[in-house]
Image 1 (cartoon, rainbow over the protein chains, first blue to last red):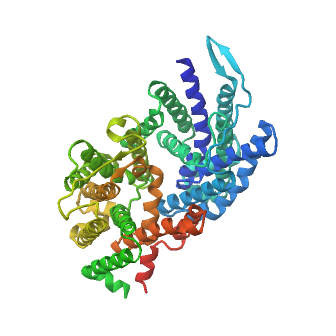
Image 2 (cartoon, each protein chain N blue to C red):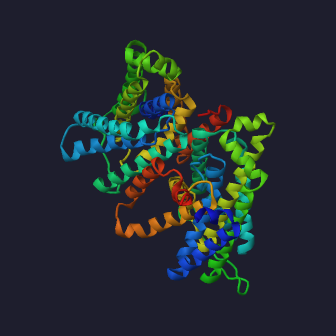
Image 3 (cartoon, each protein chain N blue to C red):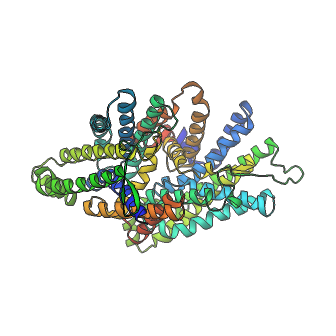
Length: 277
Length: 306
């Protein structure tokens, strides 16, 4: 049981890292960004490239992945997201989905359609209270907490962070202060994407890489964002860990239903608290 | 010229019929039957997207509901094709009604994602819990009775049956749109709050539209089952939603010709393009981007202005 809880925290941590970018984009720009899943996949595949083709160690591979994600997310922001400001939500969904589709096919082209495995970089477990917990999973939980604290500090203490929080609450007011809100949202977009790439890196050793991994994680992240509230940083964290636990515990009781349970929770939340975008 | 076609329903139907007959006999009847079934699905989706103005990212659920409804009925009760179609449509309609009660209260991104979530749950239900009924991953292989010349195994009969269905659905939608109900829907799409101020209960009307849209999708699913004598989870697969969205957008949302052109265009691309361009999915994504930014009215929207 304890192992399920720990596993739930691990999944929750990863979901948090990936979903926070989605939540910020959703809350700040009102855009549902399907391409977020692509950056996540790119992070994982970049790690794989770093490990297998370049022979880097895990840490450098992770850095490579995050570094690669930054220009790609910049391009997406510049040429797609920026054009979607203020448009009907439908086109944002379709356009970002199209980007995801293009990217997934590109991944299939370069890496082939078959799943690729990445090994656990640490490979050791700690024995604790009669169960074995892989150290790697504990590190993931630790990293996600660090990121949570880091982001909280970022949004509370730095100027950029404060502008973004203000922009999330009232875009017009911030703009009337003479601040170019779009620039800051773009920064947030790239930051969120970098986190998504990091999420891809962290999740890769736990599961295998396949070109469609972006789709799968995306819906889970939407569930987190919807349950937690768009643009709501603390809510996203709570929702991520809660849904991680749902997945883990459901997975223990009735294996394949783990994902479906998350969607059921999402549906229930949407019923009782519909958001109008 | 094209706008004149649109104004006259019978001319529209005639052109659709003529077009498909020509297309069918010049290429292959079974293939065009597939095209037409997809067009029926797009018509159902377009009712929601083009006429009601809400994008659903999980309409495959209703296609799958119709398909599996028919399949399970045929496998476990009686292999009568006509009853099977009726059961399929009814299954989809019932599901759309139950889910619609909740789903229709939402809009925008919430609507799109909720439908996606429900589609995922539906796909799960088909794959995992009841493999003895649904055939799990392998799907169900079926056999349908025939009544003399009303034999669905005969490609010509199937072709004309599907064509007839397509024309019937198109006519239904055209009448629908030109009715006060259709006007109402259009008004709701543009500004729902205003319509509510006028005293109308938009919720009921949106629910009815949702059920109708789901039923048409279910009809397409049922026809699909009969066409292939087979059903499988790929008919409820959430990642295939992009197909119908693309078709509706590309053809032109909000009208019958647009939906049919979009459906045909998409099927043509996915069937023939793969032979010439290996990375046709990438091509699809790029085309989708271009359509989303430049040609929002779709092919038919563009042609209408000619």
